[in-house]
Length: 129
Image (cartoon, rainbow, N blue to C red; front, top):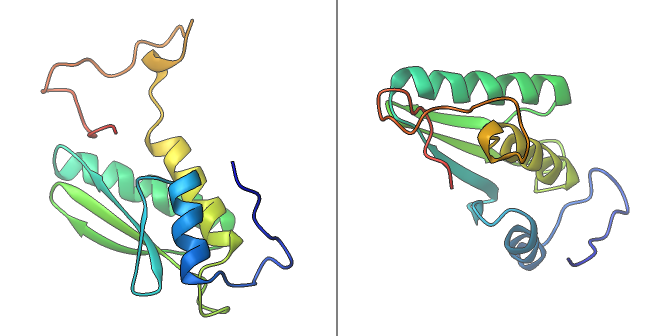
């Protein structure tokens, strides 16, 4: 994994640095229009609200707030540091935490006592990568 500069928490990255870092660290995210973005696909409205609430909790806890596009079966998250007017370490760190929590599957954890959501479409709520 490449090492990235960390001169200051509000230092912005160039477009090339952002693209490279996304490729290395957050392959399901992309850069567009000054933001790093991710589309989470869900199975419907209730699932979408669970994703929105998770993003909301993590963002509030981090005190770094994304822009969201919310629809019936997806949520688009857009991150950029408004004060710095660009993408910073704050954006990458929050995106990683969102990935960790939203994509978590207990059944995927070896030796977990938790079963995870059944494969039955009646119970699935998010489309895992």
